[in-house]
Image 1 (tube, rainbow, N blue to C red):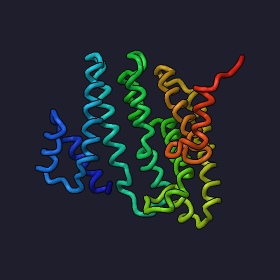
Image 2: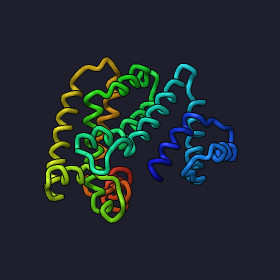
Image 3: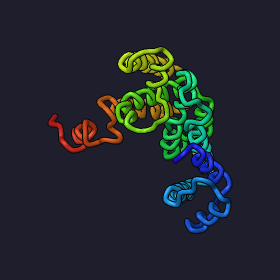
Image 4: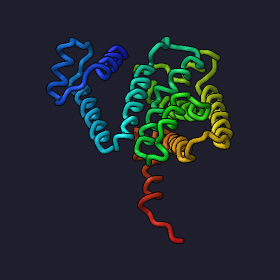
Length: 248
């Protein structure tokens, strides 16, 4: 889907709230939204309906979680290549792409399903403030993802990755760029460990969501793209964890 169509996605999210898929499509067509794809918007509508089902399961005092989730979805979508040149400086790329990678969004999704004492308004507002630990987690997710996908992405038209930006900005080879970027990942882990020792006033489980999610990201991308190609190393890891018993 093009960036222009993605921006239309945001417009519809903000303006359309219809009771059925057919009515949803009719409204979009009536608005003459460019880039309208019935299959894509159908998937979005179903997702939106699922969020409504989830909201219905929440207690009245917990429904605020849905508002935060929708705002983070809009924020993630707006940063999907939004405002970047075709080959930006690495700093500019990171400022946008640590949001577009979806790490903050999915962390809030996980937080939304947690108990009331953990998923407080203060916890969601803490995410809104972009604390250092959240930025560090996003950095790890972004760079490990880009390095794992670099070979496949070169075979098709793609948005410049952190690897591409570093190579262009510093005039290095791909191997050198990856080595330097992994140094940023190492620094991000140091920042994360330091931040975990700082009291936030929130439940420890809030920061543990970030910790465990980041650990999972490293495992998924450590030996290639285990997310898109799970039949490789990820299959063995999952089976060793959940299927094959360990004698103690």
